[in-house]
Length: 250
Image (cartoon, rainbow, N blue to C red; front, side, top):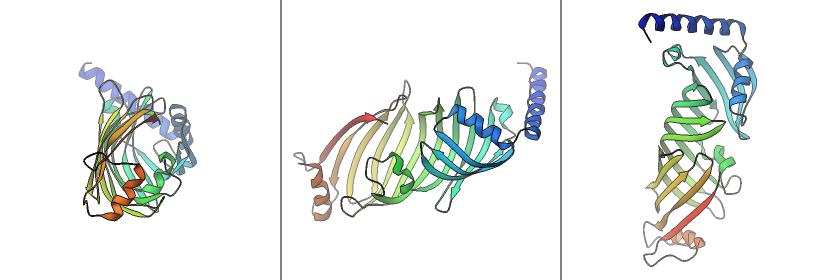
């Protein structure tokens, strides 16, 4: 594309966006997102497509809090419709950029912290079985047809406490996420500061099939409380570790 053509394209794009901002309320953007991501629900929408908010955001039925957004004027240079977003509640805050493309939604530079309780919707444990804080440091999340198909970045679980079936201090763990070749997500999970020694890997396909495998062990062989907790997993191997291997559909 020549410089002259690019200049005219940018001028037309800006003029069109200004037209949208003046003539379309925020609900227009909410409805557009709902078509791309049926699992996403916005309630209490106010403002305009340029700058607006929703009092309540739900994804797959989980309450994420409220959201504010403002248009990113650098977006036309990347041929996207881009917004700076802030998802917040009394106990959480996430900030990043959302780019709405053709058939896809990108979340980039997502930073913040949310309570573990906010993840109950996706936990295999009973409701309110664990507490702690999840630090989010994600370079990119990619959604297609409303489904998460790729991720890159880091998740830090801090001050985790297990409340079921018995109370136990778990400590801190780190998960490194990378896009998988051919689609999907690969993750490496390890302990940071914990009475547990954890080495695990997780693969999640773009169709939602997951495979989680690894080994758990007491970091201190003399830690009877941790050894008692692990005994619920069955018999250890010859090295005293507890291997696990799970498959399923997310």
